[in-house]
Amino acid sequence: MILFDNINYLKDGNPRQQKAYELLEKEGILLKLKAYTPLVVGTIPIEIDIETSDLDIICYWKNKKTFINDVLLFFGNKMNFHLTESIVREQDTITANFYIDDFEIEIFGQNIPSKRQFAYRHMIIEYRLLQEKGENFRQQIIDLKRQGMKTEPAFCHLLDLNGDSYTALLKFEE
Image (cartoon, rainbow, N blue to C red; front, top):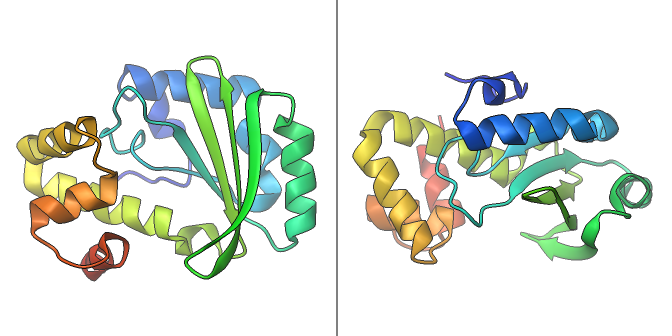
């Protein structure tokens, strides 16, 4: 099992993972966000990313205003920077999107510890399912994503799960 709390696994991963590692280190992104328990999540860590996949970083903030100010300070000058406040699954959420080099980066922050956020929980479940079901399953997920399907709905489609895919996947949580 990969320990996803540390990005060292990206250093020895596939070419895109290695580029993500180099970018995160060169830009000091996780170091800048250290106060917010940042975790790299999503499709790149578990090798189901496609050409248009972004690099997702989730954060845990206790003070929304401080988090917003820090994100603006650290990344507000990046290409196509955009910050939004919204409600996601009944939680105040801050999302910042921007580009560095070849990567679109999304920073997603909530007042929920990072490892309890849906994105991390889903990634762990998806990683385990990919390990259990093998390469053919992984390729099917990638194919569905290339056809425009989001990650969680793609898993639910192949697993024949009904209802809200974001909560349906949680039934695989240990």
